Amino acid sequence: MANPNAGDEAHFGVPAPLHTALAVAAFVAGAVLVLAIVGSALRTVVLPRGVSVRLGRAVAITLRLLFKLLIRPSTSYERRDRLLASYAPFLLMGLLTTWIAGVIVGFTAMLWSVGVHPLRAAFMESLSSIVTLGYFVPRDLPGTMLTFAEAALGLFLLALLITFLPTMYGLFHTREQGVAGLETKAGSPPSASNLILRLHRLERLDYRREIWTEWERWFAVVELSHTQYPTLPFFRSPQPEQSWITAAGAVLDAASLSASCLDEPRDIEAELCIRAGYVALRRIATLFRLPHDANPRPDDPIAVTKLEFDEVWDEMAAAGVRLKPDREQAWKDFAGWRVNYDTVLIRLATLTEAPIAPWSSDRGLVGERPLTFIERIRQ
Image (cartoon, rainbow, N blue to C red; front, side, top):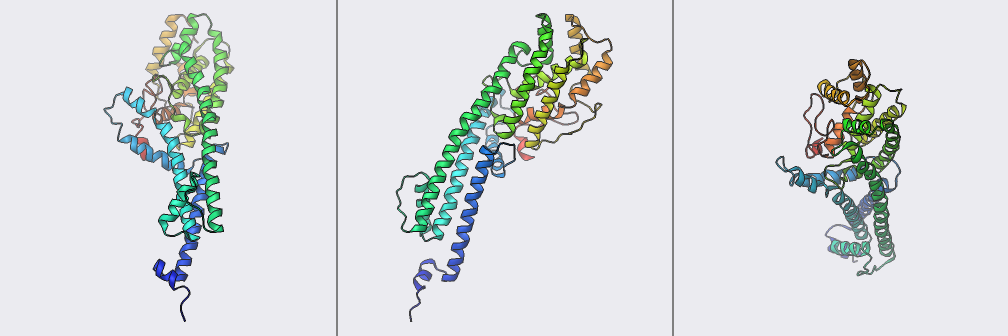
């Protein structure tokens, strides 16, 4: 009597039971891969909280390895800035490409498992379905269902990115409005001493309280957006000498100088701004797994030296700014404020390859050599 499975054995080169097991395994593996892709896309785009997505992290690291080939220690800052300005857009496209490629591979495995043979035919049918071209017509109900499911999923991923981009760019422009507006008050690159001295010369030192309140709200927006959309920190400012992290550092240092040095009534707005700032920077740093002390001691070392503080003090005194009588206590108070954001500020400036600015991207941590953008990928 003829073996009814003889044709299958001849076609696949394996016994029918083994082929059935392979088909089941292929379907399960394909379904798991597709579900993983969908989960990654939803956590990256839709989930309203900052989570580390393994697939997204793998794509980011791979892309940064490619940028390593282009950026060398001798590369000028102008060229480095132009190259790094492309990193975030390429990362977005890399994520979309990875999602689509994963869906194609997953549905290829599932189509093969339900009888679309050989494997090349399953791949071509999957490719045709994801772009909804319809070049290949399914021959049975399981294939038809998988084809329609893949086409719907492809449209879903594309729609997800289309709706995602305007939201993210809207948050980017909100962030950059604050960064660009700071230039008129703190210079370019921004510095804390410039901010205070400029307000003093305009006889509007009291206006600093409005600045602290404005930037307290800015820090809240940045914390929410930069943890929900981890690509945003790497979008560089339109002007090469500007950066969201150096602007944040200038405002925080100015608020710390105001709270510790100015002989004025207690600056509650400055203290709230500092707290909003270091909470935001710590949460962004935590998302990127940047090490920092969540409860630093007021006397822990900071990257700003006493000599640098004295230079700013002398500059403010020479300009006629009313300062507290005890300079040593003012230094201790300033260091006590700065220690809350010192580590995360410098690590984020290093991570994003921020342009050189005083007291932030121009230095490393105490006792550490600052890591370059490329060296960060090895951590």
